[in-house]
Image 1: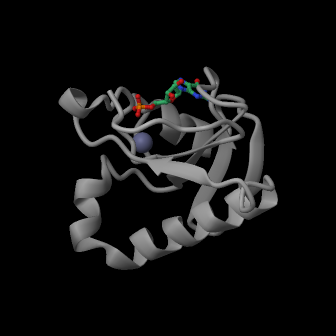
Image 2 (image 1 turned 90 degrees about the horizontal axis):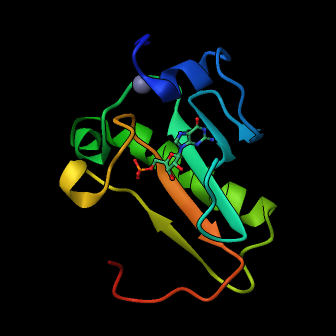
Length: 114
Ligand code: 5GP
Ligand code: ZN
């Protein structure tokens, strides 16, 4: 846990979040600045900087993707589809340096992303 890290502080309950689901190793909450009608963030409880670190922790990667699928189902996104995004590094658009999967749904998605 890092005192400097926003998502570590959310995971520790020090900063409030609209939590929609939780597991032993992860939690899912609503993005504070949603980019779609449904916009969730799925994070590991432990501090992991980005998806690049899952290379050495594939079990955690599996748990997080299972969580992504579970929360997408819970939010009713299976029928119309949804998008899962994780930005790795500042150049790719990562602004919070604690691994998170964006789960976006409730509107048509466009490709390619910007
Ligand atoms: P990134 O830009 O790193 O891929 O995504 C970070 C996300 O975290 C952004 O979509 C941003 O809106 C969200 N975010 C930033 N601060 C907070 C916060 O305090 N609470 C919540 N729930 N989301 C946040
Ligand atoms: Zn952290």
